[in-house]
Length: 445
Ligand code: ATP
Ligand code: MG
Image (cartoon, rainbow, N blue to C red; front, side, top):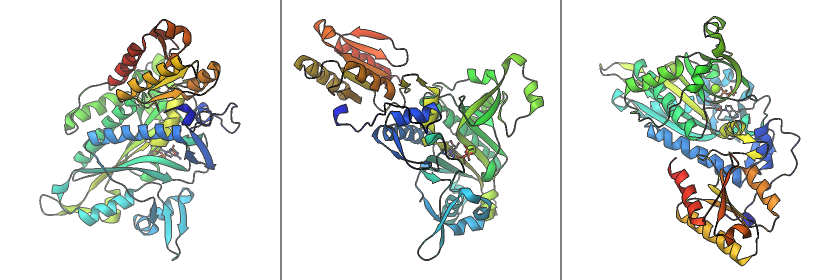
């Protein structure tokens, strides 16, 4: 992409409505624009990152054997009356009537609808286990939407639902989700710690939230600092292997880590004092096992091996896809702007031309652009007639992890400058070496 043809409405001033750094930087980098309270348009740069995050979630869900599907955003109130949640959900549910005076709502989550699909089509234990998920817009009429995409009213969420014959199988689905979530967040360059939590209006006993530690987080968290040493890394996992998934669950949840809702002072105080931490975190996902709560209410039964009809065991599992942009920026920025982890960066590499309009310079930049593109990478080329300072400031603000700078002095010596956004360190290299270096970094992901 050439910046001269791109829509990147960068703001020079700090927008006064933004209270936290991720909101400020998303507005300043021209990623989003508020349409009304808690509702945003996604401008090209923001949309590109949203899609990258969405793709990682899709890939990891399907790697775990979960089936993508899509349910509507607008639902009829009838199913929600059947489950009893139409009244229970309260003011967060956006309700309205269609022209026939039927009660409709904008989906805040979809346990009822998926259970209705299941009960209509699945009758035998032989079709189980089954897990389906969607990545779809949700609406919750939050009393205090704030912090940009972090607490929106409209937000993009992955919601998945498992159907199993037995509690044991459903707990395996729970563990499998935990494992796949660990992989998902690590690919985005994030450490998200599973913490025992409270189930809220979804219901059920077993639930973990995934929290990214950040001072601006809305949740108070209590944990043993040893949990921050854990990482999933690139280990191989067989998602059908119950014992292996249970082992990962055990490894990542046996140390104390809880949100304030489930915090237990006595257990916390049993941690060696130097490892006790009280901090704040951003909830980027949650997994639930709730047994037969919805299958009982909606009569979702299957015929078991013994011929008897039994309600299915279920769980649901969410990832805050749009919130993740905010969480990643909170975890990865400096005073100049965003620093995207390679896994989610909107463009792989910036190209800055210090002498736009000079035939030799323009030619060198075009050649770099083509080489990077030919290797399957997406460069963002700042080909505007701007002074160098302005170009660098824009690149730093939008946070591409790598930048190649082409200037007249270097070109004379046959080199360009490759700069890491994270460390600020630069190196002079022949252009083809710089391209190889950048390609190698992404190939290793
Ligand atoms: P919160 O406690 O932050 O209100 P929640 O527990 O009600 O969230 P879940 O039902 O667990 O939310 O939804 C799954 C995920 O969707 C959450 O972990 C979070 O990352 C994201 N999410 C929930 N509400 C919002 C929101 N208003 N704006 C953006 N993302 C949200
Ligand atoms: Mg939650």
